[in-house]
Image 1 (cartoon, rainbow, N blue to C red):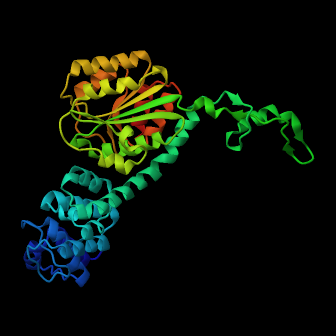
Image 2 (spheres, rainbow, N blue to C red; image 1 turned 90 degrees about the vertical axis):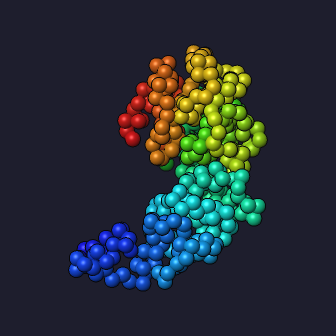
Image 3 (tube, one colour; image 1 turned 180 degrees about the vertical axis):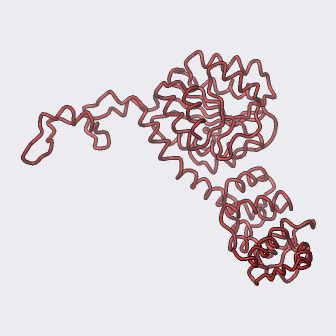
Amino acid sequence: MGQTEQVKRWRLILGKETEEELQSLGAAPNLSENELIMDEALAAIYDKTSGFAYDSGGKGADKSKSSPKVARWLADIRTFFKDDLVSLIQADAIERKGLTQLLFEPETLKNVKPDIEIVGTLLALKGQIPERTKETAREVVRSVVEDINKRLETDLRRAITGALNRKAHSPIPSAVSIDWKTTLRKNVKHYHTEIKTIIPERYYFFDRSQKRNKWTVIVDIDQSGSMADSVIYGSVVGCIFSSMASLKTHVIAFDTEVVDLSEQYGTDPVDMLFGIQLGGGTDINKSIAYCQQFITDPANTIFILLTDLYEGGNISQMYARIESMAESGVKILALTALSDKGSPSYDTQAAKRLANMGIPCFSCTPKMLPQMLEGALKGRNLVQLAQTLTAKK
């Protein structure tokens, strides 16, 4: 990179107020028309003035917050920056400048790059979103949900169906239920050398009817504000579970009150997310007490507790309930986060207490979750599996 380009980059990084100083050093940063537009887009968020001042083209600005200006700004940052940087700049616009207009006007919201941070902000402010914008907001949420679903559904389904007991066979023919391994093993004696293939005398099929709802999965989600990303992923995961005939799924959200999302919203993750109210206090014990009614076969139950473990309710009862569930045979995963961003702040003392009970307690990326669930279904030591997967991250 030549000196001229380096000077331009430093000018764009440091802002307009450094232009005179750069010139005094003999480095005149002559920005092109496109670079001036990029500079104006960055200055709207990162300069030291208050409010949002922007006029595409670098021709000056005022303090107006009209929708056309925000829409032009959104178009410009998407023109000049990659998707990950667009997401970061959008988040900074809301945090630094309070630019909630991104979310409250349909003509601007439809130009926002959909990402998990925007969805989290939409859910936190959903009570303030004007009626005219609600449908656009739902479309933004749906696009993010569909992306997450595409990334997770195949691996989750493969992990769960691969781990379920498939030893029992059925005499009822079904092409999708053929047990190829057993069929080939039992018919290897019927191999024809001339055509070099096996012609099975008998086919063997998995008895899928015996597996319907054999396992119960309970997803208990802390909807406090700090858990926004985890709430979004947890809701999508819960809906994937709900769509699987081999699982009986319950999705619960809680703060100081408990909401049964699976009863209200079925398998639509967008409806489920809009049924969540981010923020408020936390009563983990109360939510666990509610979830215990669904445990009828502990040995075939997985309980996923998604929380930062900061308990505002009766923490002694919380420990007692979790310990009782574990002793009865319930497979428990305590996830302090379900997110690609790593673990946020969580109660380390509570995490240690659960770990001492033999309960895996850690932050989990969505990519790791299928392996943990497969391990639970196969009866593996989840603490050891969690340690192994965490070490590989």
